[in-house]
Every structure is written in structure tokens, then in C-alpha cells.
Image 1 (cartoon, rainbow, N blue to C red):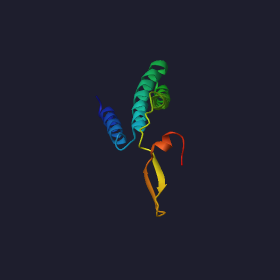
Image 2 (spheres, rainbow, N blue to C red):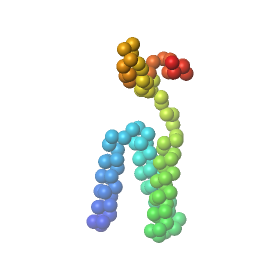
Image 3 (cartoon, rainbow, N blue to C red):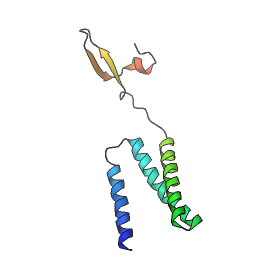
Image 4 (tube, rainbow, N blue to C red):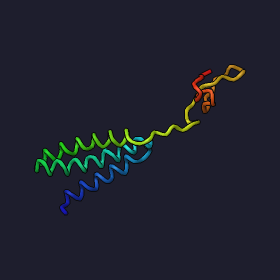
Length: 109
């Protein structure tokens, strides 16, 4: 393996490691999907075109498609109690707290 290939592989792995930090689960799925899509697209582009331009086009298209498919597929769980609502206490002070059952039944009052 040449030094250039090793440096490129190291840069890609470090980028993936850094981008996985402090992301929401949906962003993590998008990052993983983009990485897998880029790798698959690069392989397909090289197999079809046999040159660098085809490989780069395939990697770009694969990354885009992978990110879109990774974020659109699967259930998007809705955690009850994660939504925050604004309330007013009897002294007129406004505070924020997790929404109560009235929020989930469609009544906001």
C-alpha cells in the first residue's frame, strides 16, 4: 500500500470518527449512510467508467443517495416527554417544562 493511499484511508477514518461525535441519531444515520453510499458509488463508478472521473461521480452520487436513504428509512420514534412546553404559574412567571398529556391529545390549553 502506498503512502498516499494510507494517508487517504487515515484521513477518511479520522473524519468519520470526528463526525460521529455529538450528533443526533438521525445525523449519525445520515453520516453512516453517506459513507457507505460513497464507498459503494465509487466502486460502481470505477467498474462502469474505469477512470477517476467516473469514480468521483459515483462516490458523490452514492454519498447523496446513501444519506437520503439512511435518514428516510426506518421508524422515527417520538419520545413522549421530550417536547418542551411553556407554562405560566399562578404568580405570572413563565417557565419551560416537559409537555403534559393535554399536548399529546391535541389540546394546547
